[in-house]
Length: 406
Image 1 (cartoon, rainbow, N blue to C red):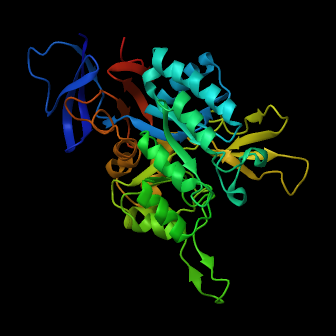
Image 2 (cartoon, one colour; image 1 turned 180 degrees about the vertical axis):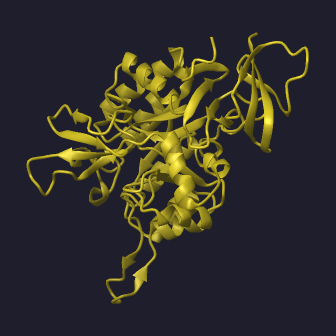
Image 3 (tube, rainbow, N blue to C red; image 1 turned 60 degrees about the vertical axis):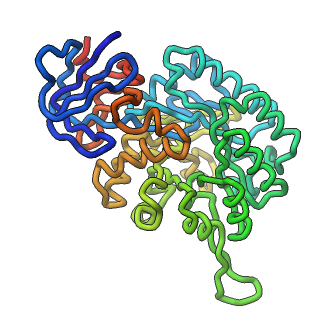
């Protein structure tokens, strides 16, 4: 069994910060974490991280793709390429997100992604699949194609659960739709996390679904409408889904790590009002992520967009459309750095939003999401600016920027 020893680093361990410490990996697991230098006689491949931070690997539980890979239409080989690309940014788990499409297309792609997860050498980087749509509120559809939106039909839900339910980990839907409460119950019964998103639900509709088992919110403050004016009482506000998900502590909330999608004050606000383990940062990244500013993306339908400061903007001859926001191109390490700045929290606390907290929501906190003896050695070695120099996936080095390990 191969042993790797990371030394001379600040360890963000589950139980606290250890300065000038070392971490031992045997096979896939962490077998020791301690302060100081490794004891004499401890055999293994020693890697001096040069006073960098030894952090839990990041978990991106909402990402549509990276580089030129879109998880809704990627091949087996392209999916592998994408997973390797995420590792460059410290990511050790992704939940590959598929957007609104016909149900047969979603099922077919879910089967392909499952085969990568089960068979590929880097498949363990994929935790599973997130289905975002087609059961969304039309007014809040965002970038989802209107022609695919519909209400959850029982035969469609049952087909998804029967054919790819084992790989589907989260599913985003609008709780105000017909059959949404039944959908929530079916997801819970089959171990899939019910997630609110693309919704203008009332407080009562959201509360009912939360009591039925809904436990997470997709990109809060982006395509989620909160408060409304009472149509019967001028200037009197009615509570909406925002009030419900802020009130119920069992519901976790994700923010896109980008000040365009989420105005900066919301980061600080959410850090204050939600329990510390119910706040999550995601990328919601699309094709073009990881490409330099100015990169032009051409979609299959002929539409074009360009990368600019972590977002995608449209290219269109219509000046009213040209430059409009069309999606995210942020990476997890950048998103976490922004979170620390905007929420005014420490680097250690920010990283919890992208490691331990998503692990808790996904139900995998016993195996990953933090650094503790017995857990998988899912690790990112980073500097104080969140730049990633090394990533380990279940004890295997899958990214080594500085070539310090031969």
